[in-house]
Length: 428
Image 1 (cartoon, one colour):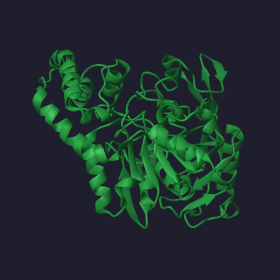
Image 2 (cartoon, one colour):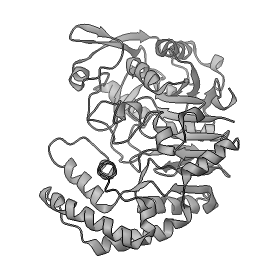
Image 3 (cartoon, one colour):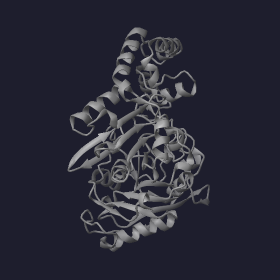
Image 4 (cartoon, helix red, strand yellow):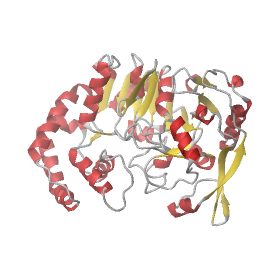
């Protein structure tokens, strides 16, 4: 029996979908515990590309139970559309294979409208405009609407009335149009009627599953540096993206977790605004984006690219308590030489071995680079570490040493099979 948490160790988009898919072979249950449809996990199975936004990546393996946990914010229409698409592809063969927490908060049209209007004004953060932030604000303000509320018309009407009284004047001040109660109520009730078959007390279900010895995989969204508490605030998401969020977002205690795997690319990317110390410009930026297909799975926006930031990775190791790392997209660095790795920064002339806490210090941070020899040979066909070119092996081992964390897995291509497994967290 094992419970394993998968987290992003950078700014998201690290390739968690593929890694979760690989580890799902050894799990009985896959759990999403935070965030919402701002996440996009890309999978390539048998040459077919699939992007999931809400349903855990484990859905591509038959017989696995998928759980959307208490800590998520869920847009009902997006979830229902995703369920229909998955069923159409033959991937969600039984309604019993999907459980949605009745405690998860829902994203409603006014959340998305507020998000979009804010992004048009000063201080835009580069959000996905999916309503994530406003929904979490409502949750923290104790005026949120939960999935279970969609089944109770009287309560839902009262909650919507209270929210519209407060939010409609704000929407109008931002330049939007006020929302009418009745259409919102009708739409929410209709969604609730469709979702009813999936709603459950998922915390209780997971507790019983753990007690009975079932293997559980927790699928994180976004990345450590986007965590609302531990990320590069204010350029962060509104949820907990670190490993601790797996417990608060699923309703299982920390003693149930056996291992935490952090996913990192062989370089670094970021979407949206915010500081990015190792960001590249010019030809190398274009090369990494083109070769790595660095465009957002959710928004399609081009990702900013940069050299691997091991100083930031070291921070992710610490705040997540990582057991090990899974490195993705090593193949993208083929033909790049030297490969630069950020090992620390100078901030105000002083050396620093972790990413600074203050946003102004991050902007001013001057990366300290170490140059590593690259490799020219193709590696997508390699399945054993010793078969990799010498330059690729040295790069991996150097990152492992600098991060002071073992590397469990190396992705050498987008497909499930294009992977070198060094150690399996489900097998000790």
